[in-house]
Amino acid sequence: MPQSPVQTGSPKACSRPCSGSRSRGGWAAARAETVLEGKSVAVVVPAYNEEPLIGTTVSGIPAFVDKVFVVDDASRDGTRERVHALADRRVQLIEHRRNEGVGAAIVSA
Image (tube, rainbow, N blue to C red; front, top):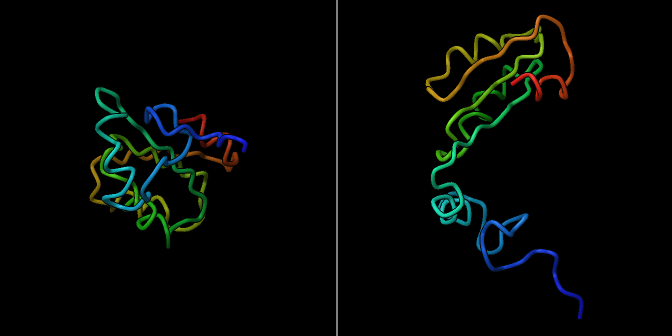
């Protein structure tokens, strides 16, 4: 029988959740202290015309994430204003003057 590519030993060896679920209180919450102890975690959120969804997206980012970089890729809607209105102190807005695409948004953070 072939072995699974995901190891169930150390949490650092897993490329995806080894057990449990990824929901609140599941694998991510249980393993966060073990895997992330002493580390800073940042998330980059590329955003182009995401005014209706950016609040939901940011609010779904787990509490163990220390910094959230939202990259507004020259949106033509109210994405920038919506990001400024967020109460999450982890959020930092980076603005592009012209649309550069998701790859440029990721590397600009």
